[in-house]
Amino acid sequence: MKALFSRLLQTIKITASRLAGTRMVGGFVRGDGVFLPHTRVSNTACFFAQEKLDIEDHVFIGHFSVLDATYGLHIGEGCQIGFFTGIFTHSSHAAIRLYGREYVHTPHKKAYFTAPVKIGHYSFIGAHATLLPGTKIGRGSIISSYSLVSGEHPDFAILSGQPARVIGDTRKMDARLLAQHPELTAHYLAWAGELPTAPSENPD
Image 1 (cartoon, one colour):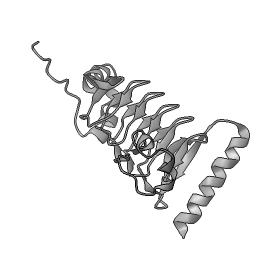
Image 2: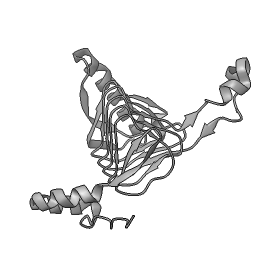
Image 3: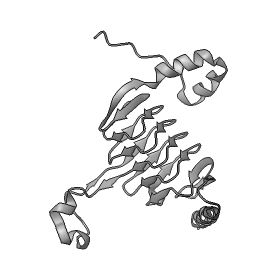
Image 4: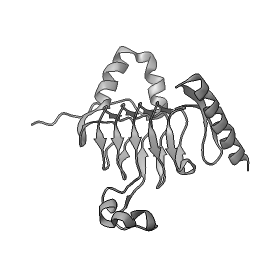
């Protein structure tokens, strides 16, 4: 009952904020009623099956993004999701052709693809990116804007393209930046658990 009441208050808060236009709203109530004080969500973000959204705190979800949690969506602590991003856990791209007019009358469809999506801690997803069902992003990763992502990817990956592929490792960047700003080392260690070590280069 408390969780339902908290969700209702959140809905009222977001709806009221739209009177002032597009803006970020501080604080977010998870489906289980847990309040995330440091999470910021746009009042234009759209959620499907929000009660199935497993989200941690310190998350940012930008304007006009669509998050489908119908078949399970986990967003780790500290993730930032850019504007106009789409994250999907189901797709009817094949079933609509197979069923035709019977599509809307068929509750349990074949060739209807479903799979959970997982985004690791402190990952950054650029604007206009799309994550397809079954995508798993490791922690500390970067997804470039306009990328089309599917499959499983390692921690600290830099992904780009349509389809997206791994083009780099964020630890290389992080090691350089921490050398320039050593006062930030403790903050990095607090979530990563270890200092970044750039992976060895391939000999070819």
